[in-house]
Length: 79
Image (tube, rainbow, N blue to C red; front, side, top):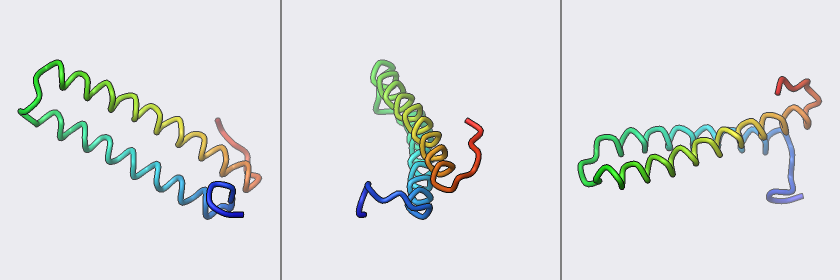
């Protein structure tokens, strides 16, 4: 199998690592936006709304990856 069709523990671990990195970048971006003076209040609110949506999606993906990992390895999941 190739690409997204492969579901080995190493592939799932790589996906989990990618989701962790994405989450860290989103939090860092939110912090940077808080300190930028080039946005007015409305623009900043819109950016925060987008970032919050992305954070929620990333958290949902992290949970899905964890469940997939447990399914592949046969471990009990604590979802």
